[in-house]
Image (tube, rainbow, N blue to C red; front, side):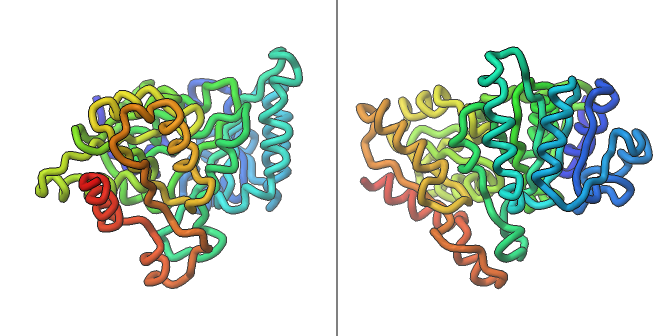
Amino acid sequence: MSKELSYLDAIREALAEEMRRDPKVFVLGEDVGPYGGAFGATQGLYDEFGELRVVDTPISESAIVGISIGAALRGYRPVAEMQFADFISCGFDQIVNQAATLRYRYGGRASVPIVIRAPSGGNVGGGLYPSQNPEAWFVHRPGLKVVAPSTAYDAKGLLKAAIRDDNPVIYFEHKYLYRRAKGPVPEGDEIVRIGEAATRREGADITLVTYGAMVLPALEAAEQLAKEGVEVEVIDLRTLLPYDKAAIFRSLEKTSRALIVHEDVKTLGIGAELSAVIMEERFDVLDAPVLRVTYPDTHCAFSHVLEGANLPNANKIMDAVRRLAAY
């Protein structure tokens, strides 16, 4: 059985189900209690679970993550909310120098089962601070897992999987998708396994690898290009660390051409790593250079017009695909 949910409702449902399933799961963050969170992701949880399991915190991301690490070491499974992913940098030391390393430092005798929810991304007119895509900072760090769902189905399934994982997981939820991404979501205990990509569209000419909010313009571009006789295979990574290298390589065996699309800036984004791995390990199957469509190396403007000019979109993706097809 499944029901139609928005991306945001799917996140809320996953939190409630996991808190009912496991009394060691609790949520914490700024305004997550009676207010229900800045975006409403925790609405209703305070009424059901009370102040000991839905914990309002001071405006201190470092404290939020630090409390989560300590609680995890005592056997709990905290789900911490960063009100905006941009301010996750205030808790950066706690994440990369503490949470990411503890299991290694203790020789596997300790685990840090924390989830850090990070509302990220632009196209919402947020300007400089509430529009960043900082996923590459964390993909660079061993000891973390990083996920970025693009659908309501995955928003629920990946969050449930992250809460049950014994490693620290950074869960990037894109703000643009909260009320725009809707679809059937299973009722009950179904999860989406961390580390497995999804093929959103089959195609034999070009492999397009993307994730998060960029799946939507990627699919739009693929539909338009099919009318021109170019069949694009769209792979949604879903998990950025560890990413599904096998799924990318299987697609490349068919298409011999790769395009990587992400909303993060170009320099040292996820696309840089994927490009390098493809060229190191599958150069023999390539018929063209690996291309990237990304946000330019600049800050996000408050102006919708300027932001729209910078964001990757279906037209920019189609232009890149045509270049690859003609190579």
